Image: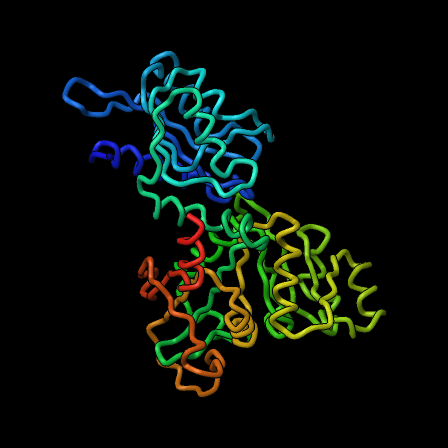
Length: 376
């Protein structure tokens, strides 16, 4: 069905799609390649494109525009099913058909209800050859945050922490906030600059007095979120002092004192009240609120208790763990244990790097992998 030339063209489309990371959300990252075959069966790329900005032209439109009239009779390789509805832009299926494309190779179907197979059907009705599933696993992983928002109504959650070789976490309350290397911290700031929200607990907010902003600024301005059931976030904190410049959301409990809540609101903070429920339900409700705000990626930078709460609620999709080559020799400062070994979520390691001498492990949780495999 697919030959190595097809695979190379789709791999290029996936490479192009990643250029939109942090700029297209809540839309998915998508890349496209238009290619023609010569007499020997080799592909020649005549047009490339990717979705570069939210609200801007889709990848297919950019690739077709680059190919121009040569697109007639050519093949289109696209990482996600072309849209068939009017949104911020016209249907891509109409443009593909009008360009005279004869074959469309799609990596993965689009789960968005207004598409969900409709794009494929529209192309087939027009007589185009449509093939689906080339590099599907890679395309599904690439669009996992978008799929989480569509399928589960919440953002993709990235849990990040730094730790020593003997398992001590950097808490931010002293010089151990610099446990990881400058190169590792630069990676974290780059990550902050392409996501929708950064979350910490009130313990971290008080002990570290962080800004939680990307430095330098990235393509997005993340919402800074504090889990603060009693509305204890100090009005003198950097978060509150900069709330009118960069948004801050304080998640309080129903028992939070009204005067403290009012003071935070007056200082420019947004307030979200958690329902009277157990901790996992409260966290899920907060994630659903962020989903309603169309947040696609959330970075959890909280301390051990917050990280354990997210893992315990089954809300972690991806992990970034920085391991510093140091022995701290302190007890009781790692992640709190889960009730049983069976509760420990397996992690599929996707990437291992060595920034500044540290070890960076990036991976996804088993539940996340199974969920997206089922929906692909």
